[in-house]
Picture 1 (cartoon, one colour):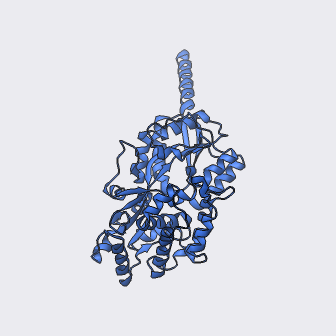
Picture 2 (cartoon, one colour):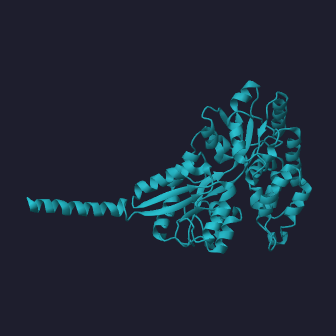
Picture 3 (spheres, helix red, strand yellow):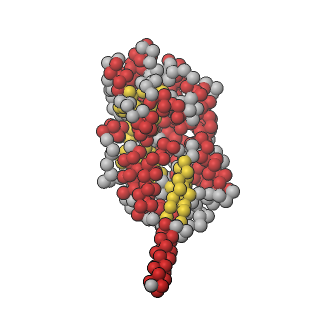
Length: 412
């Protein structure tokens, strides 16, 4: 009997030991930072699927806010307390290049399979010929979201020309309804509202500028800036918009306090979460002649910390994150437009957002193509576009400031 008891104890110890290697003391925990609450649900879904398939690895997600993320991440890296995995925006802004200079991210060259991705999605991940971040398979664009109930109440239909859109705004304003929910406090919100206006009025300038054949001094660009100013003066954005942040802008539209909101395609799920009863529609802003141009940028994935104590486990997650399986989860939960063959849009709303006659480059991307030595036009946009929106900087002066930071000779 005593021998049987000893045998049971030994078996129990062995089983417990095996269990702790997977689920207990030997389980590796990775810290992961995401830059905005807007992606929390979709990223959490990917993490849960990954941990289901890799029970020896636990990922703890920490979600920051866009206004604080860049400073928090830079400080964490400099202090030696970097998260194992963290989001960056590729070369679409200044964050990743600065982090590379700090030695923050791990060199991923040759470690991640990029074969399923469009070249446009991967080009933005390289600096000095080295891969610093994983790609995303979602196309980020901008769209005009509209409240179907408000449109129905005033017998309005989706506009087919730019003039019809302005007529809708005039009608709504006359009825005491704020036409467009807008927040001028955050540079990204300004950008995502401005770019569709630019693509509708001057898509040719975007094409020419992206090819290095047009400057920021071109009157076609000023035309879009002036139209934005005109909309503000006419009251299309309501009152006090300069002091409204992006979260309040999105919530204001979600609650029915404005008829439309011009923002990123990724915010479709944010609206649904804010108000499940919202009757939501969307369209690409029409050009003067009726065609629709869609600003296209690819989403980005994640970086690995160069100082992580668990490089193998981090790479295991990053390799999973770039798979079609993981990207389909992101696209479905977040409601993104698929940018990889074989992936499907979540619903008809997302399909509508992704419907256009032509694709054009992002204005923000163009700003960073040919910076002068020691200058950063994108950073100038980030810091000063809110001054333009608030009226403390004219469109002409703002354009001149941006133009002075660009070396057009590099485009030749």
